[in-house]
Length: 207
Ligand SMILES: Cc1cc2nc3c(=O)[nH]c(=O)nc-3n(C[C@H](O)[C@H](O)[C@H](O)COP(=O)(O)O)c2cc1C
Image (cartoon, rainbow, N blue to C red; front, side, top):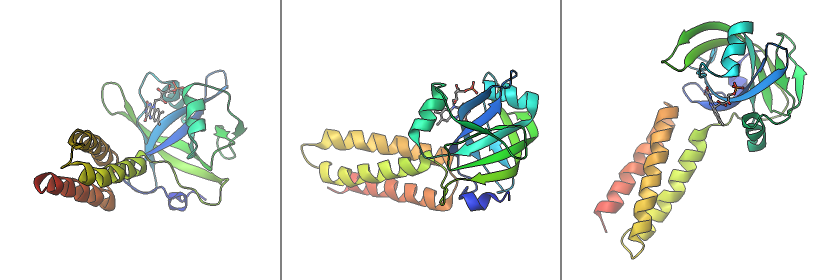
């Protein structure tokens, strides 16, 4: 089964995943990587060309995209700590044992995205589901929640002696909303941003 919709992998939203590949000595490698689908059939990565993941994918044309919400797994991938792997079922790829789900993929197309990054288009060949509900991690969710929390404090502080704190919060809202708009084109996400921005502007205007 390779239907991405069963993983709540929504189109046009970047998710943070852990991509696993084999190094040239066949040792497994895990790296945190953003991943997106535009059509729910293909997955897209934009790895920097100087990463081991990019070299491994170029050499073997295979990878696994592992889905987790666990910051410890991202930490272990970033700091190259020990991780538990199992072998893929359909492709010769390492799969993370402790994730919620893993998608084995084969590479369809690689092109240059910019000077430093490639864009890799991949087709799922098999999905492993380890958790009952699988919800890939997106920075969009945390950025929206942060914006909403800050928004509720802005109105309280703005026209008081805590005005300075309100301005700091508005700056944080601006950064978070910029992030959401960069990582998601989902209409509901963009609508939430719009409403927060408009409401902040309104609060600034009307004491
Ligand atoms: C949440 C998260 C997302 C990341 N996304 C990407 C990405 O999309 N592309 C990329 O090249 N690096 C990304 N990185 C940085 C890589 O994980 C980092 O460069 C890593 O050292 C690459 O490992 P590798 O050389 O073993 O492939 C991300 C890091 C984190 C923590």
